Length: 370
Image (cartoon, rainbow, N blue to C red):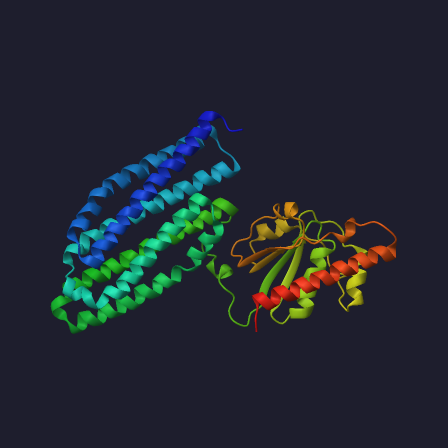
C-alpha cells in the first residue's frame, strides 16, 4: 500500500498532466481552425494561452522531480514519472508550435488558401485525431493504440509533402500571392513537427506500459512486406506439450507464409508423449527446447500474432507484446495433467493434438484468407 502523501502526489502529477493536455489540445484546435479559416481572432487567442501552457509545463516538471527526489519511487511509479516528464516536454513543444502557426495566420488570404483547403482540412483533422488518441492512450495505458498511432505517422508526412509540393508550384506560377504561400509552407512544416510530437507521446506510452524504448526501432514493428513470413508466438504454461504441438502444426501446415515459435510461462521439460504423438503425424519436435516467454518478451522481437493456449488465469499472466496485430486465447486442457496408463495418456495427447490442429486451421482460414 502506497503512503497517503506519496499516492496523493502521484495523483497530482496525473491531474496536472491531464489539465495541461486539455489546454494544449484546445490551443492546437484553435490554431488549426485559424489556419483553415484565416481566423485572426482565433490566432490571437492561441498566443494568449501560450504563457499558461509554459507555466503549467514548469509546474508539472517540478512536481515530477519532487516525487522522484523525496520518495525515490520504483518500478511502475518511476516509469510513470519518467514518461510524464517526457510527455510534458512534448506538450510544451506542441504548444510552442501552435503559437508559431498562429503567428503566421495574419499572412494568409482566403482567396489564395482556397486551392489548398481540402488537403489542409484532411491534414489538420489527422493531426488533431493523432494527438487526442496518443494522449488518451497515455491516460488509459493502451500500448496497442499507441503503437498504431506511432506507426501511422508516415501518413502525415505524405500529406505534408503533397501540400508543400503544391505550394512550391503555386509560388512559381502566382508570384502576387507568394507571401501567403510562403507563410502557408512554413505553417505546414510546423504542423509536421507537431505531428512528430504526437508520435513521440505514443512512444512514451509504449515505454510506460512495456518498459520498451522504441525510439529508432520503427522498422522492427512495421507491417511485414508482402511475401514475408508472418511471425506467430504460441504460449502455454510449461512449453512442454500444447504450445510445442501448436507451433509445430503451424510450421508444418503453413510454413510457406507463417513462422511460429513457442514459449512457456514456467518452462519445463519437453514431454515425451508430445514428441511421440507428433511423430505419428510425421512431425519431429524431439530437438525442441522449452523457452521462457518473458525472455522472448524482453528481447523485443516482434510478433504479428500471439496465441495463448492455456486456461484464462494463466493467459492473464502472459506479458504484453509490442506491435501485435491479434491476440487469441484458446483454453485447451493440458494433456500432461492427466493420469493413467500410457495408452490412455497417449489417447489424451492425440485428442489435444487433433483439437489444436482444428483450431489452427479455422484461425488461418479467417486470418489469412486466400
